[in-house]
Length: 401
Image (tube, rainbow, N blue to C red; front, side, top):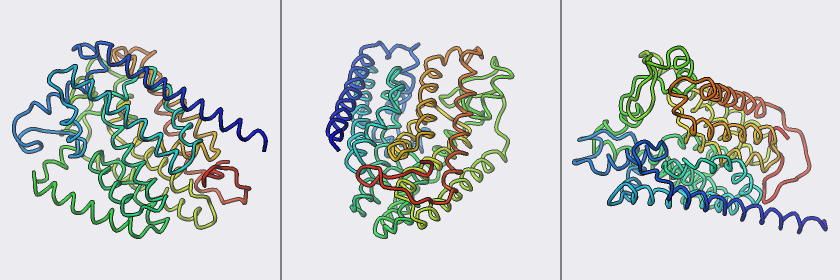
């Protein structure tokens, strides 16, 4: 017992140090000349400027691959020139990243916040996460579940609705509300998504959802996806830029997208079915707030025709929750994935050229994602064993502890 205050003090010191590292990384990034045309870190910022400078109605008069809430952030961070846009983007994403830390601390535990900072630390070494907008959906999804867990059901359900219209992926998190019997949150989510979708379609027709779900009608496999990296290995010279991403020479067959969607949704349903059974058998709530969401997001990534480096951010809150609950296997795998993803992004030019030292890590990283998916499903399927409480603020033993 005497060691507890000292341990908590060291956790706080580690959190402060890792937050300071992020702030320094953001400052360095803002002064690194990323506005130049040949700088890969500023690539998405140039696309955001293009969208903001386009005339007419988004989705109707020009294509946009981002849902309305993300589009709003793109508009808000748009500056008078590229430097101003990237600066606004960096500030917004750093704020959202630190807000995720705060939500995990408040809604789960200090250890969960530390786990998030540790697991994402490699990404800060080449901080592309601050010049992309994916932290918006990550923060909203984390806040939505955190509010619901703390008893703010309507606010949690509404926040999860907003997260879906920032990026579509948080939709797979909604079953946690049913399993935890958050009736008000569930009703709020269902009604909110229905109303939001109706409003979106009424505004621009089905063009909006179609452009988002198809990434502006792209047909090639993105070279970092599980199928794409193999096509890229066979003929890297024929890979090309399509809809803002490097795509393979091989186009996706008409049946591939429906099949991948079916595989993703089937895995998601299996994960939530296993989570429901485990929770009812006495599993702690890290099963439904961490383990199952982690598996569901992994299913989306593994069975996706595009796997951009920033998509790895989607995993982090749920991996942090299971890591804080004692799941060392998934924690180590996640740390390896974030480290490899940072290297992959930093060597993107060599990857495009097909160099083995850049393509090989993509194959390994993708293999680790598959391993994480399989491990997660196996852990969810295991019978619950009575164990003493060892967590903080409700986070106890994980499915693999």
